[in-house]
Amino acid sequence: MSESVVQNLVAQSWQRALNPPAAVPASADVVIVGGGIIGVSTAWFLAQQGIKAVLCEKGHIAGEQSGRNWGWVRQQGRDTREMPMIVESLKIWRELADAVGEDVGYSEQGVLFAAKNDDEIEQYHDWIDKTAEYGIGTRFIDRRELQSLVQGGASDWQGALYTAKDGRAEPHLATAAIARAAERLGATLLTACAVRGVESKGGRVASVVTEHGTIQTSTVLCAAGAWTSVFCRSLGIKVPQLKVRNTVARTRAGPSVYDGNLYDDRLAIRRRQDGGYTVANGLISDFPITPATFRHGHKFLRAWLMDVKNVRLLLGREFLDEWQVPKRWSLDQPSPFEHTRVLNPKPSSKGLASIRRNLDDLFPQLADVEFAETWAGMIETTPDVIPVIDEIDSLPGFHVATGFSGHGFGIGPGAGKAIAGMLSGNDSGMDLHEFRLNRFYDGTPIRPQSSV
Image (cartoon, rainbow, N blue to C red; front, side, top):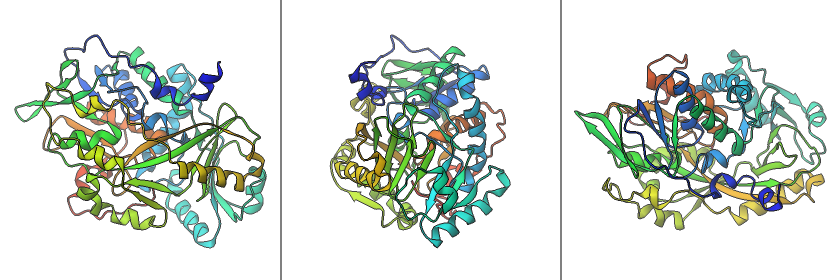
């Protein structure tokens, strides 16, 4: 492998040439908008049921957040409302490489959330109690056991929340592998094929209009990540969603400090398949102020107050970019999704400096290990930091799956199975009531349990 390829190992997901289709199918049972892990997992499970699914992605499969995330596959620390779905997802991950016939980089090496004080220790014990019914084996370990697992961490950790059966996978491998498996089972995946909008007849979905032609269908799933709220707004559907920028780095191969994933309020670190580490800041999040902030911000107050010390509000290019996006557009003209094929934010220089500093402070043995690659991604989040998975009452046949709030990679296969069940009417065994869109408008208290 050449040095230039090694340098851009992760970025290959979004830096390669676009590959538009020569034509689109005339019809489909289901059309999926968005080629992230949620969309491709849904297509895969639909294909297993013999349902004709066509997935349309404006850029590349996993070109945005599904190819840029930390690669964590964890049950630990989840919102309790997500637990049934993530437990099912872990079952899928454990068999995924065999099921899709490709390496997805999955390894079950455990997850640690380090605790520095009594408040964090109490919080972790409380989470163990609340999720005991799921039998995932999470326990709190003391300083001595933590030191036996983590090599040379220079910290004041008092212990850690530990789930030995949690794991990791490689984002640049996994989503694309699931996509190819879906295609082999009969799904059609189209890249460089933006969906401009949805047409209705008799008050329900009748077709989707893409830049390459119209596809007749009665069922649409919008799983467009950070673009979902914009797409839905063009249909008169309000989805309260804001974006969070996350800056990430990949190191070159280095000494082993822990073969699993470790989270501290300063640093998130996980061992990579190539012997390096994927590293990011722990709690710090960049929230670009955009017009959507003024439309939906009041619903996010509780989530912001939970993390007020760690939220950095930014006013810059993102505001102008979103301001220029029209509320609606003609379906026979290029859409906003064709103007921006890949949402590719620049990594924060301050964020990278902070990651480097925190990595060196916590693990001095990695101080000489260089960053091989850096990037940033835009995470879409909801006011209660759990997803929306629902059919929209005002437009029968139109469904939304969005707002996974930075937790979507690990839960993706399980979510795909649940969403496929919703679309096909075949019971997946996972109740989606907690993820209904109307919870933000029917008076249900907005109660986030975790941060992005």
